[in-house]
Length: 477
Image 1: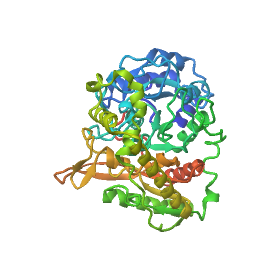
Image 2: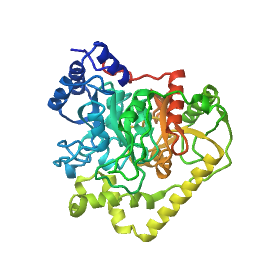
Image 3: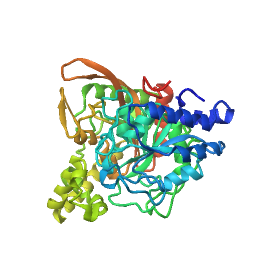
Image 4: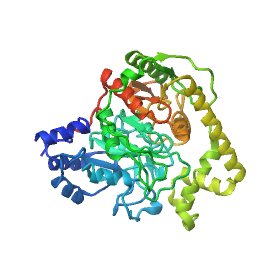
């Protein structure tokens, strides 16, 4: 038996299987043992018997053959819990497996280990729920893992599994990826099909993975992307994501890049984070032969409370007549938001939200009329204390879910592809002014719709020129 789970990326683990250096059964045993020892609380449910059956019969010729994978607990696997990370549905079971995950089983050959923790209904970008408690950051368990795919990020960066599924409706792949030093790709809306039986509105949610390397993301897209009739907005299949990785760079030379350290004033960003991202953006431009240009000022609107409350329509429908009796079982923020929406949301607010979305669309369009790509921070700061939720002052910086959404959510509203990559570490300053630790910073690379392959090529170039740690210090060795 291997002493610890594989500490490289997923593609190298498959290579090790094929070379006979390690078997899927050995890897699963090491993974389950590491999860049992871990204090991160990254997993909320395990299915060791089914996982072992998959490992014993794994077809290692498949792209993910025999690889133990964590599944975000908001993603459906038939027969597994369908809790939505909420006490309200703690006893519910899934009646079907999602399209993306079924492709990972059938075409990918993956071994599903269990469910990784998420925020309740995916509603917050932190990693705390009444059902599961707090999931710790892989670099510092006292800090947030981010959300809503926080458990997936902690599991991958924490050395428990090499890859895990995620979803992103406002930053829920990219935010935890950045906090934990991982790659997080939000493809053009529709790139990977959702469903079956998914709520379509408000067309902001995409799905994908939390990964240690860009090639792992490309392989995930090879297996899972492409049209499916259960998602009427899903896009046609593109072949060769992994095969063609890095081959588009010559076409990108001379393209224009904007470096926006606070995304045109959209968020209060820590100066050290701005500096790190500006430096990384300049290095990327030099490596790729991009021209850095200054943009004419563009005002990106804050979508505000109207948008937040309108997004609760799907939750209200799912809870049905369980509300309001279930109120005490919900996370405080979710219950408060739903109560507000029930009392205040109306046609006028819905109309105002849609008009703001139009203005947001126009603002991003004006940016991409001037440049081909932009880079900005993924998060305004490094991972903040795990107990923080709503905006709170920590030292000189405002941290919390609202400020943390300001740099990622806009690209969900308009559907642009965006990839977060690690660009180094920044010391975390405690309120008393003492440096406590160094934590990862993520940089978003953003492009117009359907430029996913170009964005992954630029992410791959950052990775090649300035490699990042694949797992956090202190992960299982």
